[in-house]
Image (tube, one colour):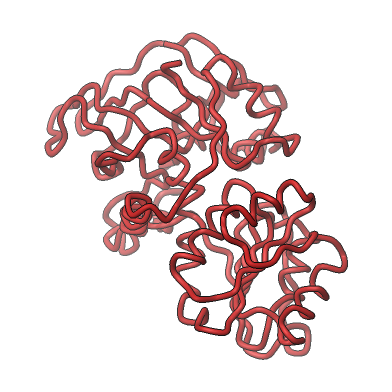
Length: 346
């Protein structure tokens, strides 16, 4: 079968021919219908060898959807042909966090060598993939896999971030979204669907801000050194009750902190290497800073339910498997409008 692999440290990913996998006991073989491309993949491919944490080559793709092709011994509750989405942050299944469905916060995964598909285990940008356990599959139930597959990360991650701040997003409140690309443009839609808050979107180009307005942002601001001041002007000097940074670079982390109101939530989602200085006098009184990771299995079910209700419209660009390296080039250059999705079936 064909697969997109990261094969050597510092090299570009390439499409190669690899053996089709067979499911072992308890595993599920998926015929992949759609797989997402993400900045997290680029971050992984930017690491030096000593920081990689897993062997190469690696089949990329941590956002996956497909149809069940074969079941390993002992698997029940699924049948060949079922259309499913893959829950990506795999855990041990038995620790306290996993027992709550919070496998994204599994306390034993690192020690057991359990890694997400595409981020250590073979991923979804291939004709077929192995899913380690049927609990990591969620029925699509009529959703289009092409537009649903980004929801497994680009939908789940902002949903997890936004959900925690819902109590603060009351009538008259303001939410700031920094970075309106793959995750950010979904976050805007989630905020509009789940809260009465005014949404202010920040990004570096007018093209990206146009997308933010299309998906529901009330106000848009160019993300530069003056952005936090503009947010304070728009909020009468108070700042925002919730700030979500989907870039996470040093300048955006500083902007996020500077946009916060008293008792605000500041959530640093992006993995751009930025940090916020927190302390008495350095941040507004009682502001809470968080750095969440992905989301839980129950939350993925909730995100897919939201998609079925029609409140989420993920903007996707589709590519054939042989064009997947080009999709990464465009993503790295900031030229993907929304989310790039690979279609291994053509």
